[in-house]
Amino acid sequence: MEKSTADKVVLWKIIEHFLTKVLTMQGLSKVEHINITNSVYAFCSIVDLNRGFDSRLEVTGVDLYKKLTQFIKSHVASLEKEMSVFSGADLLAFYEKHWTRYSIASAYINKRFDYLNRNLIKAYIEERPKDFSFLHTIFLTIWRDELLLPSIKRLTRAILDEIERERKGVSISTSRLCIVIDSIARVSLTELVDRHIDENSEYSDLLYIHPENVQEEWNQDIPFYKDYFEGAFLKETTAFYEEESNSFLNEHTVPDYLKWVLICIQNENRRAHFYLYKATRKKLLKATYDCLIEKHIERIADEFPNLMKENRYADLNTMYKLLFRYKEGVKRLASMMESFMTEWGTAALEYTKPTPMAFMNTVIEILETGEYMLQEAFNNDRTLKRAFEKGVEAFVNHNAITKIAGRSQVVPELFVKCTDIILRKDLKFRLKCGLKDGMRAVLKIFPFVKDKDIFRKIYLLYLSRRLIYDNSISYAAECAMIYPMNEYCGNDYTTRFRSMLKDMKKSQWLLEEFKEWNPFEPFEVGKSITLEKRSACKL
Image (cartoon, rainbow, N blue to C red; front, side):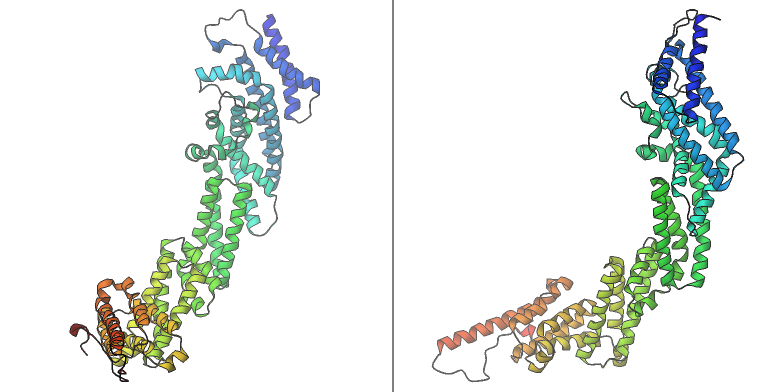
């Protein structure tokens, strides 16, 4: 045997002894720590004089690389054989124990073989990237091929059984699941992690590169975790919650079901946080929501009217947040909101006297209650607000009062009479209802009046009467009632109203001028000066 070969045999026996102790967690002395590093360097420094150096690939470190790879393979294969007799929780316990040991040992070996990584393997990878990998990648690849692949189905089944037990309320070791699932993800990073290595990388730490650090590529390029765990996990999740949701809904009310759904979602969120990755978390929550909400939208939405009647704002808010994740849920809630408001208002007006103030008070009470409900239960959601307004418009313009009158024009007429009562010099009304409150109520209802042209025509008539007979409470009050209408109908809608108010202002000015011009002759009580355009005040 040549001297160089003999030296390699001796050095390998030393290295092999150290590797065995490290992989079996026997511990090394300070001297042994130093010796293993020196032995690696010495092995890589041996030159075979009978071999040429036409290429960097002829460096003797290749022998050490191959021997180390074969040794790790044999060790992991023996673990797989030992693990084959276990199943269920025992399988997970065995796997957790030996994966943890393997991870620690691999990190240590990676550090002690740093010379091989930096000076030899790196050069080989540049020449033959398909044939050589950094040691951390080799460790992960061997674990995947020699142990995980032969037992992945049993291991996945054991994981899923533990998760199902936890979902049913049984206490399990979440830290163990975290370690096992984490290992499945990490072995998916082999070639991918090599792409993230630069000259300053600490090779001893590379085994612990987290999948989240290369999340985008990991999601696209690595099938192992998805194929062998994630797919089965999501399928089991769907089956579990389909069965549980059907069972719970058959035995409980919808409000109780919604509370249970929130608990389930919180649990899945916690589960994803403790032992799943972000990529899986999003898919897990979608699968959970789809099973618990999307497949029961119709059943859940049917409870909407009952919750509205009982003013159960907290339950309505929960329903809103859950159903609004889906277009079908949005559509159903909006439709039911519109129908509910129409039915509510129509029913209330059946028992309302067909008088202006009674009509206005009933409508404003429903409006204010509904607006409070929108805020408390639905966060003033735009879609539901539009549906709410459609429902209000429907019952305001078509109700028991319009049926009795036989015409829908009675609605604008009633509201014009309300404004007339509010803006006339009527002391009794002002004592019962504040001027501002009355005006606010009319202006809040005005947008829902459908026949606004008829409203304008009748309003013009009553405004003319107030001004001509000097029965208006004030110029400021008239302006405050008219100008907000511009926001809904534009300036053209109120042009004649404003023209009449200007004439009123001119009349007041002429009266003041007349008094100043003739201060000695008292102005007779009841006499006044009023200017009105003929086109504006046809009575």
